[in-house]
Amino acid sequence: MDETFIQLENSLDYIFRDKILLTTALTHRSVGRNNNERLEYLGDALLGFVIAETVYKRFPQASEGELTRLRASLVKGETLAEQAKNIDLGQYIKLGSGELKSGGWRRNSILANTFEAIIGAIYLDSEFDTCSDKVLALYEPLLKNISPDKLSKDPKTRLQEYLQAHKHSLPNYKIIMEEGEAHAKKFFISCEINELGMDVQAEGRSKRAAEQAAAQEVLDILKI
Image (cartoon, rainbow, N blue to C red):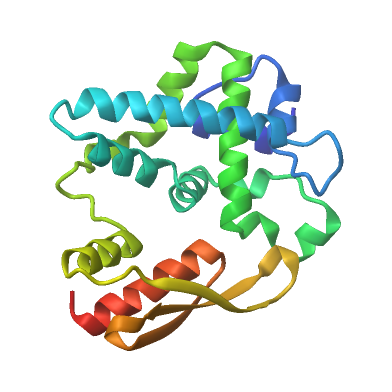
């Protein structure tokens, strides 16, 4: 086993019995057919369940909406990428030449997907309880500091609730332009609110990120 993989196992506090599972979990689709996409699918489902069960038990008074937002904040791409960075996962990912040249090991989407694949691999290499324990150990710093009271709603939700409260129609988000290669696209989005005479533009690395940025711009203008 490569010495760097041993370091990763130390960071995970888990030793793989089947080293091929770990190798597959670290192999991006740009390398070839034997990649981590199936493990990513499995890890995504496992993470979603473990985190959903955890917040359900930790916050017995939280509403369904609050639990949904708590779970979403813990399994969204940005959070998964941060979890990957905490264990220096990027340096272990196997990438094709194109992704390697473009710095794919630093890209949040690749880091997040690989983190999910690692969780899927741990499950297949052990059993559910061990996998759950590892997820909770990795997430413990976040879980210590999260609660429904501290969790703020995302800009699009806050803007929608403000407009509904004031009996305005909902904003209209439109893609103005896309630029960049497929692996590094940038999206330019407009947020139109006709009743307020507003047409605000913002950009992001994904459509969702650009829409959230545009909504935040509107909130800033409205001083909400």
